[in-house]
Image (cartoon, rainbow, N blue to C red):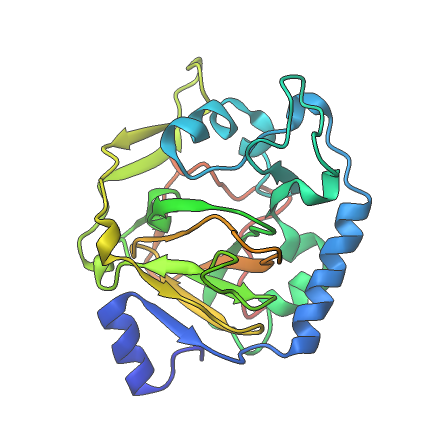
Length: 278
């Protein structure tokens, strides 16, 4: 179990996240990076489907919120792009392989390398799983995962954030507000009603966070950060000349948990949420 040590469990329950260095081997990390490069080499996205990835409310509604390409990506491998890498017609302004912010949302189902890592005995347990994969130079504004992945009751979703390269303050490590997982959530992203102008919408208010409460959490290649679904976290712009590749996925406790039918991500007949230990 990823948090079997009593001291680690205490730290996780108190702060809402847990850093586990050397969780995966350098060889496992290199295998994932090689797999991503193979996927990028054959990437083809029609210009009208090219959208920028963001966790900022206004930008998200403008980009992913108006795109079926995003909403129907839960059982496919699809590509989302950095801000400012596309012109008004959707053409790339830089090399396409350097423009990708995120690949999602079903690497764990369709790519054998990521499937093996996700279902590794290191992380196995009686949970359902679904996968999100940020890559490259992504900047993630302050947010709580439960805003996008809502369950009843709350507190049943964990994020697994795996550093495929060293993550430092210079190249975009995560920042957390310790203990912020104890205050619930104030907004949710939900599927919009049929006929609405966007595919998703936000209900509730977006809080303002005190920047002074965030602490940086650098981690070495192969390290894992376990993230409570309600802890507030972010990453800053990569200001270095180095990439910061990451593989991240979420697991949901299956027993006694209801996955909201309003969540943007829904299981499909082609890809129901698999049991992590299966």
